[in-house]
Image (tube, rainbow, N blue to C red; front, top):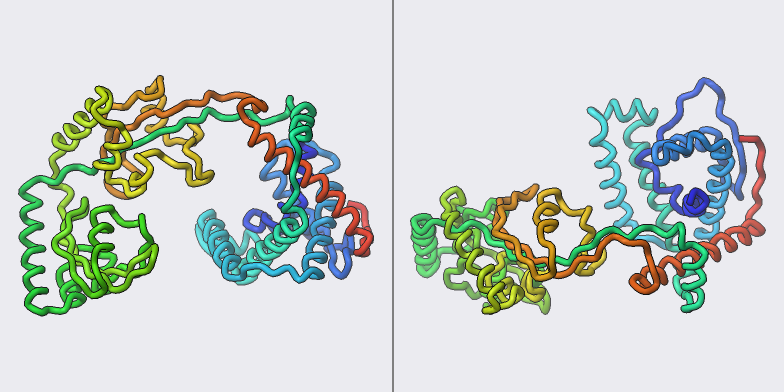
Length: 439
């Protein structure tokens, strides 16, 4: 496994700017190697060594670590030289975004900018530039690798040979669960709904009397995010708005104003500004509900009724989620939870929040549905939910019978890595490499 880690380190080396620290030393720096027109300094090897210690604690016991790091740094510079020769281009805007995110993440680890500068022995502007340069170099290497090895495939026999050779070292597949959910926010008390309705009706009357929509939004809307913009939400892609709002907005013609539309946030008046195939440009005025004035028993009662109807066969969970769930993504999926990382309807059980692990862990068989559960997310208001266990895959070792697609991917990556390493060795014939000092 350690050999595999070092094989990958050649292309990962550039992505460590947010951890690498400049090593203060009273000993003058020295050139260890020259690769083409670029140099490798002893201090850079020290930085990479510290970085490796931070990631892999047992690496402190590796007497050959510095030699391995030097080899990987040489390979890295050869690849950058080749990328420049091949005129590899990268998305500069995307690099700026990634560099900003990485710097912000790094900044959170220090009490002040001054403390960060002292730890890195670099002024903040230089640090930002180094982070950007490292990300840009890594993007170039990645693009170069994709250019030369994107079409590597493996046969069935190659997959089985890979499995036979690496069976004992293959990763263990975590327990996976497929889950559907039905979310309801607390029902608003009737008295609060009547108050909000009276407000939106008065605003609607002013619109009918000719008052400008944007002006009224600035003066009356309860949406703080759009109020100062005259209620303008900009272009919004289909599926990003709550269903009742979205359905009403898509039914409008440009310039037209809707009737009163209810959502879980309150009552809306919507004006369509423009429409494209998969997005709309709208503004709205909101008479918001005071969410402290809710009817919690009514919310729980509705979910209990839904649960009973599904378990008794009167309806399917998917039908109920489509009809009642207040989670926009439930529309078209029947409430099935899709992993944002893989796009698949299976989630690693250990990746779930502890409260969800407890709920889902209590569902023993496919088709079991939880009681109504109060969920308090890290952001946003609390809600109640039903969870249905659709399927469970216990933790297991990778096997061709259950995980052939995953094994095929691993085998292709292994083959791609071997070809990549051989290619790097061949590139060394095109770039002059001189080792000037022992490490």
